[in-house]
Length: 184
Image (cartoon, rainbow, N blue to C red; front, top):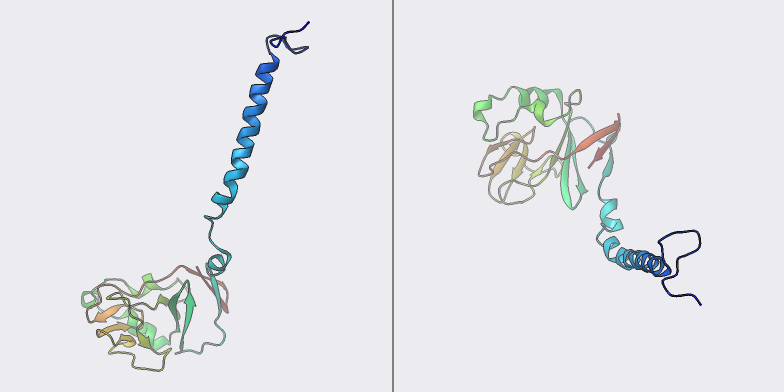
């Protein structure tokens, strides 16, 4: 007659009880992972959120001197095709006149100075400034004007006058080719 602690054939020192313990623990671990997976998976971003992670914009329809407003992650993004005169004016500004000191070259991509891409949210209280994309008042410096509290931004999106403490933010963007811009 065999006992419960009888060794499994071919393995010395290993008992059936040891095998059952290992098998039950392994099965319990797999079961716990399978039960937890739906809870972990629901923490991933929703498909509609992932769809907003990047936006591609066709630049071919934007003429020199024009600007458009697109939405990215629920925020307005101003894309401006600057003229040579606007670029020259932005580059010739004396840095001592600026509240938030950034050169024009720091706000655009190298070799693509004609394209300015900024987040269209005033840095004072989060209003949306108006400008060339709206066909309205561009403010005292030819860029954007926040009518709520009177902040004026230049053609590089830098604060020049008013209560805003910072320049319009520059989002992450890349040129996929000569006519397509990807934001995000």
